[in-house]
Image (cartoon, rainbow, N blue to C red; front, side):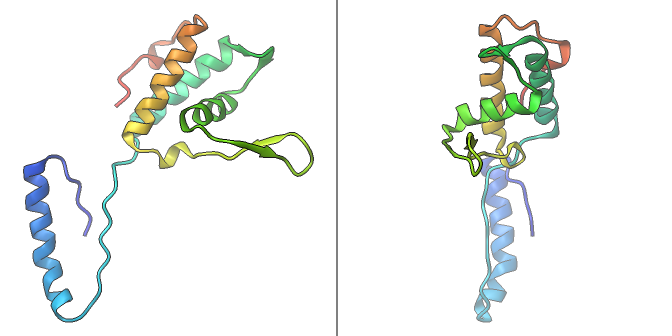
Length: 135
């Protein structure tokens, strides 16, 4: 059974319903697994992020280099998550990354906010699709 909890009252009712369904299994000696996790980022947030990354890749030079939108995603997620870099097998460095597809809505909101701040500091002219709602 999968349920989305939206508020305390609805959450309590949903948990009680789950308890009523789980109790017979537990009384019969079965073990059950229940997982509680934050909601993942939305498709709207994902679209907004890629629009922002596109604007950055078209307008911002990073230390004298023009980066792709994917590289800006790596740069910004590394900054958000305080990731670390390790030496690569054949030289250079590899950033131990984080996937945006696994981010919660709040993490994605934080990433989009960071991306906007980064671009604003560099006077990016945002496209209309880059300034939408980020939640």
